[in-house]
Length: 260
Length: 242
Image (cartoon, rainbow over all chains, first blue to last red):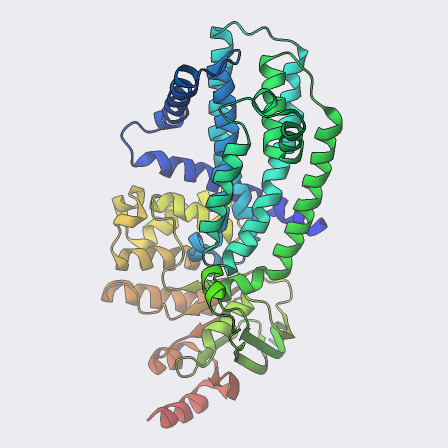
C-alpha cells in the first residue's frame, strides 16, 4: 500500500500531463472538437427522453435530467471498464520500453473520463437551473457519492486490467455483462417504481452503480439525503477491492510485458 | 575507477506458462496445453564498473534484449539479483513508444516524464533535443506524420540529451541518414567520454563495438560465453560467426 502512494506521487506529473494530452489528441482530429463532449450526452439524452418519455410514457419528475445523470455516470463507468481491458496492450509502446506502474495508466484514463463527466455535470447544473429544480443542502451529498463512485470504478478496473492481459476474449464477455448491468441499473427508468418491491431493493442495493446513481438523483433532484449506511458499506467494499486489485497488479505486472 | 555501477548475480529470466488464454478456446478444447518453459537468460553474472562501456553481442534470440529489459526493470528476474546502486537507468531501443496523435514536442515531455525527470528540467533541455533531432518545424506536427527516420532520430535525441547515469542502447546506432549517423556516433562518443556514465550497447556491428566499447559480453543461448576485453572477445566472436 505504501508503495502505491509512493508511486502515485512519483508519477503524478506524468499522469496529469498524459491525461491532458490524451484529451487534446482526442479532439485534435474532429470537426466539432470538444463540442462532442457536450453534444454526445445531450443527443443520447434526447433519444432516451423521446423513446421512454413519449413512447413508453415514463413519468418521472424532471425526466430529461433524470436520464442525463444516469447516462453521465454510466458513460464514465462503461468507458473505464471497457478501456481497462485493453489498456496494457494499447500502451505496449510505453510499457515495453520503460517501467511504469500499470495502474498509473488506469488513473490517467480515469482523469480523462472524469473530465468529461465534469462537463456533463456542468450541463446538469444548467438544466437544473432551467427546470427550476429546488436545491437543498442535500446537493452536497454529490461529493461523497462521487468519491465512492471513483473508488468502486477503480477497484473493478484494476481486475479487468489484470485479466485483460491474459484472457484474449475478455472484452466480448465484459461487453455482454455490461449491457446486462446497463438495463438493470435503471438508467432510463426508475428502479423503485418499475420493479416489484423486494426485487427492486436487491437490484438497487447490491449493484453499486445503480445505488450510487439513484442516490445521486435523489440528492440532486428530489431533495433527499443519501442512505449513509449503504454508502459507507460500498465505500469500504470499494477500498477493499482496490487494495486487492493493486496487490494483484504489483505481483504480476512484470509478466504482463512478456505476454502482450 | 573501480566503482561498481551494475552488479548482476546469477540472473535467470524465464518465459513460462504465460500463454494467452481464451475463454472460447478453453470452452471447446478440454485438454490443457502443456506449459512450455523457455529460459531466455540463464545464470548470468557480471559486473559493470562506473564509466565502462559494455558491448553485448550474440546471435538473434540469445537473450540480449531480454537482459537489457530486465536491467531496465521492465521484467523482473525469476531468480538472481540486479543491483544498479541507485543509478538512474534508461533503455533506448528502436521505435521508443510515442503517442502517435500527439506532436513531437508533447512526446518529448511525456518520454522525459516517464524517465523520471520533472517538467522544468525537460523544458530546459527541450530546445537542445529539437535541435539535435534536426526535425525543425516538424516538431509541432503529430508523430504519426513522421517518417521512420524522423521517428528514430527523435527517439535517439531524447535519450541522448536527457542523460541518465546508466544508458542501455538496443541496436539504435544506425538510425537516420549518413549525416545523422555520424552525428549520433559523435554524440555517443562524447557521452561515453564522460567518466560518470555507464553504457551498455547491444549491436550486431562489430566495427561499432570495437570503436566504442571497453569490454564485451558475449551471450550464447542465454548464457555468458565470454566476457573480457573488446578486441579479444570480438575476434573470437567473429571467428565463431563465420
